[in-house]
Amino acid sequence: MSEKAKKVTISSRRRFFTDVAYSGGLGLMGALLWGGYADKAKSSPLTLRPPAAVEEEDFLKLCIKCGLCAEACVNRPANIDKETGRAKPGTLKMAKAGDKVTIGTPFFTPRDVPCYMCDDIPCVVACPSGALDVEKVTNKETGELDFKMMNMGIAVVDTNSCIAYWGIQCDACYRACPLMDDAIKLVYDRNERTGKHAFLKPMVNMHSCTGCGLCELACVTEKAAIFVQPREIALGKPGDHYVKGWDKKDQQRVANRAESDLTTHDKRSEKKPEDYLNMGVEY
Image 1 (spheres, rainbow, N blue to C red):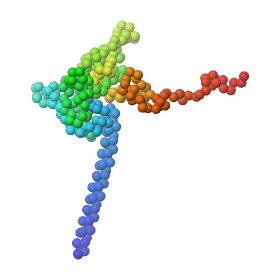
Image 2: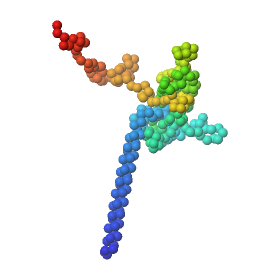
Image 3: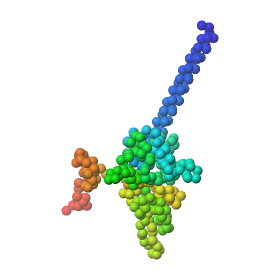
Image 4: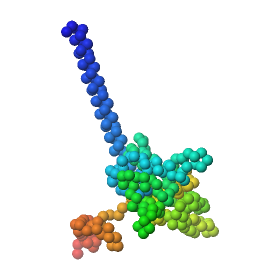
């Protein structure tokens, strides 16, 4: 083999290994960036899922990211513009990069497009994997779908920014609520400052609110003074040592736990108050 041919062969080999290393480095960097983004996206606790979604951990395992729920939502008859024949933006969106939600999974933002609580709940019926559990929105007595059983979250009123709490008459959220006088009620309260007027304060019934977000969309303030949050965020969680005596599931939850785990311990000093007050006193 001539010297020129050898140089060409060595150069080709170098280029090959350089290209492999370059491609491998890009692949590794992409994997690291993707993994970091995926972890960040999954960490958002404020994500609002479609009606009848199972617990978030199970939801992420069951959802196959097919988009059928979002498709059923946007193509529902009530969402078709009668004049143009085109579909308006649907409630459900499939998460993309930058949404701070696990990519490819459905979610909604009430301030943009709320849930309109369709009677036939097409998004749930369309789900093929069980990530949206139709049993969660099925009335056991009638066997029919019941939009009142939706449980997407709960509306929370920011009393500092709600103008109704300032004394200005506003019932926008109340009138927008599909379960008026049930999920949201207006509570009369005397205005002590004037002595002549009354407050009409919106109050949310946590047992009836479905988290549809129609109230959030209707709110007149620049940043909505009433907004939907996941129930576990809005309502909090009691300590594990608190047990509802009337709740069988709650009793079962602590049935096998050690007594020491369920006892409230007093970590204060064993000394009696009178001992502490009399320290250093000689009789």
